[in-house]
Image 1 (cartoon, rainbow, N blue to C red):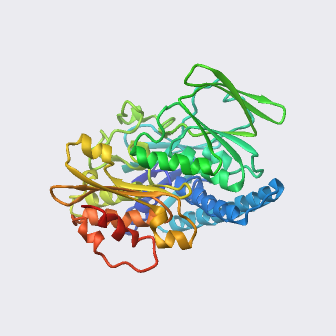
Image 2: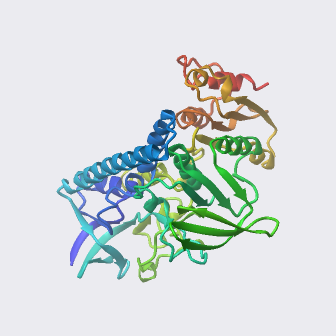
Image 3: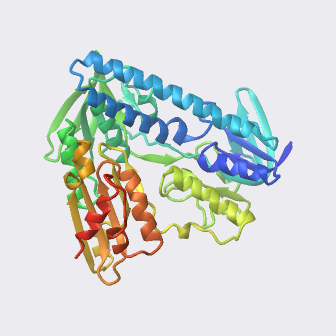
Length: 458
């Protein structure tokens, strides 16, 4: 049995970055990835990179103003080819980056614990066992498949992963779920030219956002042809000639059927722990099936750590990257970094235009007892938005009336995914809202709208 200083299960953002860092510190490192199609992790292969590539290509498709569906399909097919070429290159680059390190050995196969230090790797018919002084779990998350009649047998049901392999553009697609993943794919495929129907069990759209923001998002997407049916209960999915029929019950208890070429399951994601045999290592999981860790990302077994989506919480690539920073700091640094340091984590939903937020919503701030000042501004008021003809959207800021500190900001507008980082830095450094109100930005840019937004705070 080969002994390693570190065994990393999963080739995701946190795992691959930690592997390189530990190898450069002189540690003998093993990295285990169950699929040769996942070198580099979720983000590169099936998450942020391919989806944002399709966001870009779908925007270009929309600007072409194509009328014929065959022409739209041809543009979509080319976009899928470009996406595949992009991620294939990135996957190989990520593999090479680790494989070229003398201290790193990459195993391709399914890992399972045999004890708290021993890992068995199943690769085809071959079974290999290795020993790790320390073990790091970075196995990510996967799509939740709801228990709907016919979902498993249908030939027209896709996950976010399998849909991006589809080379024929669906004329009509039903999206099950109006969460962030469902909305991103709805926006992408609507821009390519698909007719989109979104079915969601919740009666309130984007319940975590303020109503003015959520209503603006919904109306903007509806203008792009997306049909939202909220408060629905899916009854069944069945294949018919040339397509699929989704049967659902509405809020008034009426039964409806909708025909489509494809159905996208976007009902959330769950931690990838199946098959790891965590119990053999003594690792405890939460009620939601995530690996339980402390603020330094140690599991219930001190020499075993976990990071990224597998521990639940915010499922973002940049959180996984920060997880490995915390682990590395506690191995070699000041031993001060913890997950409690992350006070303000921004996020973006890459619909068209993107929705980004950091900090508290107005409803959350009031619920916490803050006395607040609020400013809202339509994206149409921004000169840059006018000249690029991207005037849909709404910007909103929430400020503590007593301290003038920024409590939160929601930006539903073009380039919001870049702008939100500016607000986050101001919040992290404890700046008053006047810092952004009076900051000198270049012109004409979307960022300078922060001058105008915070100028409205009185």
